[in-house]
Length: 287
Length: 239
Ligand SMILES: Nc1ncnc2c1ncn2[C@@H]1O[C@H](COP(=O)(O)OP(=O)(O)OP(=O)(O)O)[C@@H](O)[C@H]1O
Ligand SMILES: [Mg+2]
Image (tube, helix red, strand yellow):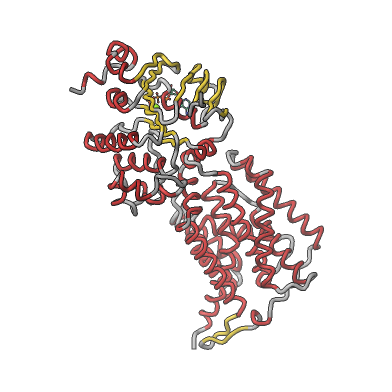
């Protein structure tokens, strides 16, 4: 029999996994491409609404909507990247912030206009509901599913970046854009694809989040805060760093709300401040 | 007559407002070899960067196999067959030696086995990261990385600079093998005038961004007066 603290730990890790899927794309665009995309969680929200619409209006099974929300967020990000973002790659951080926060506001207003400000209900398949007993703990099936997805995403990302030619081209372009171009690498396209993958993952995260934290138009800002904390605590551009930071923040948040309700949601800020005082570049950051 | 591989026609170019090259013209045939000489700061690297498309063109044109490429982006010039070996080598530090070679490789006669035969040291270091190499190894890797794109023209910016004499000999040997195949043209920027003139068929000397002299390399090698005036005689220092 395990004491309840393990249950809290499990919930915290599962929540962290969700935050990881939401944030890893931003870590890549911010760390590797130096682009400040504050509309990142707007792509996540788009993914969430795609899933809600397909499940509730068109009676799609929940799982089948996940690839669609990934693709929808990726496609939307490609359009924005081609039309707007690419013009600001060399611009100041402030210009990037102003543009992308504008998109975040637009997304909030658009979501409220189309879907209203209410929380969206979601139907998950029966095998993801309820929980499974494990040494005296009741582990939520949906949370176990989240952990599984996050592990697969992490493995695919690390393998893709470290062991494929495309991954090597991304690293080369980040190391030295001029030389990468001089060898014939289409750096703009490489970055656009990377950006789309990151946004697609945010879309997937948005769909996965509905069952845990709900979905309403404020999502684009509420979770932006978490995502920015994770990116800075983990270290810019580090996939492993995002993973570790997401676990840390997820566990702190759940444990804080469970054991110290009066401190509540404030604990994650203390954790962030502590980590950044210890390591200003984040856990796995290089700069 | 068939189109030359590379033609520069009255090219004026520079960085932003600073114009560095003034009205440069030159022609390089397929499989040709050209030494590009001149004192420090006359614009040799800038000329290579202009051929790659990194500088701002103010006038004239750059033609590749008869086609005007003056407005073509650098990565497209590279895929058309120009390989560039930068003066600072610019190895990718977060890639292994082998990844540096394969990251932009294009099909052709130069593949990993051929490269490792030319530079056996790189084979020994294939799993090292790009930033764990000696200066000589970095230079070999920079040349090998460009060769892996199977270029029709190789731009070499002072490949022997700052290297120990044994390494220079090794590189010269490799370069002679490369040129004896007659499958690739080169433009070689070099401070070691004697080596550059020995390896190439033709030569031009730059002075303050213009072509001050052009001659066959063998002729220029004997023309000590011109070399002394335009380059300063490094040749005399080597016995
Ligand atoms: N990025 C740059 N921006 C502005 N001016 C530059 C830049 N790079 C070089 N220059 C200037 O252009 C001129 C030519 O420089 P370049 O590097 O082409 O000379 P070089 O012949 O290759 O010299 P070296 O033998 O020292 O390599 C110099 O006056 C230099 O100061
Ligand atoms: Mg130079």
